[in-house]
Amino acid sequence: MLSIVIPTLNAAATLPGCLAALAGHAGEVVVVDGGSRDGTGTLAQAAGQRLIEAPRGRGPQLAAGAAAATGDWLLFLHADTRLAPDWPAAVADFMAASGASGRAGYFRFALDDASPAARRLERLVAWRCRHLGLPYGDQGLLLSRALYAELGGYRPLPLMEDVDLVRRIGRRRLFALPVAALTSASRYRRDGFRRRSLRNAACLALYLLGVPAHRVARLYG
Image (tube, rainbow, N blue to C red; front, side, top):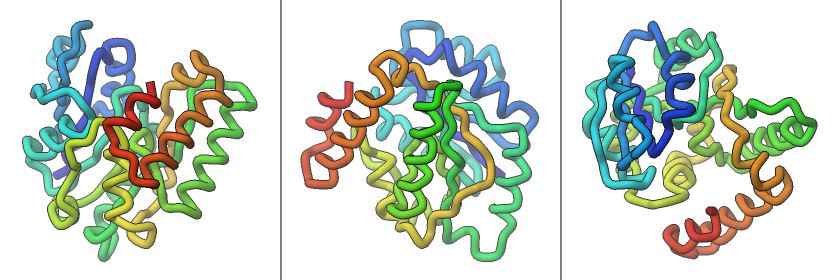
C-alpha cells in the first residue's frame, strides 16, 4: 500500500488542490500539520484525510508522518504541489519494477506560471536533478519503507531536509518519474524569479559548505 505524507503550515489556499489531484488513489493520505491557524487541519479532515500534528518544520513533520503511515511505500509531497493526472500509473509501475525497492523516484518540476522565466527555471531544475542528483521536496519523493528505514529517515531539520535525504539516497538510486509535479510559483512572483533563484542557490551552497540548517533557514525567508 502507498502512504502519501503531506506536511502543512497555513496551507489552506493550496491544500485542496493538492488533495484533489490525489483523489481516487488506493492508499492513505497523512496530513501532518505544524500549527496552522488558517483552518488547514479542518480542510484536511473535511476531505476525509488522516490528520496528525507535529512540531513545526518540514523535517520533524515529515518524520512524524512517516512514523504514523502504514504503507509499504511512502510518497512525500508538499501541500502546494499538484501531481499530473497520470501519476498513479507511473507510481504503480515504479513500485512494481524489479529492484525498485532499492531506488527512490521523484517527479518533474513544473511551475503554475506561464512566463518564460518559469520555463527557464524548470530547465535549470531538470539540469540540477540530472547532473547533481538533487531533486527538491517540491518534486515529491517516492521510496519504499524499507529504503526509508535503511537511510534513517528524515532528520529534524528546519530546512534542507530534502537535500539531506536525497544525498543519502545517492544519484544512482534516484529515478525521474515521467510525470509533472505542478508547484505554486507564488514565492517567485513575490520575490522575483532571478532573486528567488539566487537566494535558493545561496542557501544550497551554504548548506553544502557546512553551515547549519537553522542558520540557512534565516536566509531562505
